[in-house]
Length: 403
Ligand SMILES: Cc1cc2nc3c(=O)[nH]c(=O)nc-3n(C[C@H](O)[C@H](O)[C@H](O)COP(=O)(O)OP(=O)(O)OC[C@H]3O[C@@H](n4cnc5c(N)ncnc54)[C@H](O)[C@@H]3O)c2cc1C
Image (cartoon, rainbow, N blue to C red; front, side, top):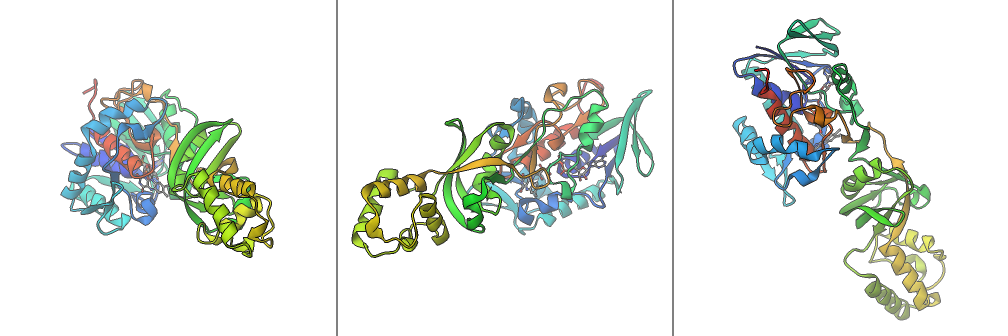
């Protein structure tokens, strides 16, 4: 059979390698090389999967849709598969898996070699602009020529990471067969907040608990590194709550606990003791040793204190107010950064229009989709690539009523 895989990213390469058995497979890739986004993942290290990955880390209108694909090609299968291609990996204590070389390029290289070895044809710099089905065959129009096929796997990815190839093309190709797309939002992305306090903190990092709230209700929470930027907050802990911030509309606030190990009461007493012990200490240095210096000064300014005043001016209720601000520093959310900065797209082609056991379209037999183009996205930490591997593997089996 002639198989076309549209998109030579993570899921497309996996689908092509799986489909190659006994079939003639061609990958059509609009960029100059395959795996361009893959080579930029994980800050150039490629967090290719996660030992802790489970269905609860996936989102979409119907996250359970992902279960079949994730079960039939699990994290263990993924590790075995890559080992079989010669890729050695290493696990971090968090469960995140990286190539032993610490280079995303190694992952792309072993996949590229495997494509070559299995005789998969690569057409790079070849953008599919139209896909049709006529008289029992698919036809892909490209900026080079027309390709015909018996089966097509759409693996065009999502909108995220535009500079690395993120595009809406996959949605459009599938929509031309009647498929519908859910609302698309950037996820795993930096948050824009009201800038008054963060601007002066640009470059500062803190280990914090970050809570996303709306009208007093908790929408999401995570703990880890928060980085302050000119426009808001970034860093792993922020990425983890960013999906919830992105899909929610209305007034949202992030509230930072800047000293998670100490409760508010103990912190108040600690500050009161410090004020008694060092009455001549300028407030400029009052939080030195507890928080990063610039962060400490920002907390005091946000509480309305002059940094020239002395610790002796602080009464017990002042220490209570400072402790309260350290434990709950509010930053009104203005939005998220855009798709270009996002690592993944929340939303995509509606999954109820595909068979979860095969990833074949329910609207067009012989048409398959995998990866980010579908309405499935994962948490930070290797889950999105695991979805790309698992769904690519399932789609590449080309199982369906039509066979
Ligand atoms: C900066 C960044 C870092 C990331 N880091 C991680 C990480 O460490 N771990 C993790 O799990 N996830 C990470 N992700 C997310 C992960 O890379 C994606 O979820 C994953 O690559 C999706 O795989 P895919 O095959 O669906 O799409 P992609 O890998 O995006 O591949 C789609 C391919 O299709 C091609 N294409 C699109 N339209 C057409 C067309 N019309 N014709 C021909 N070709 C077309 C594109 O050029 C692209 O090469 C990161 C994302 C970004 C942007």
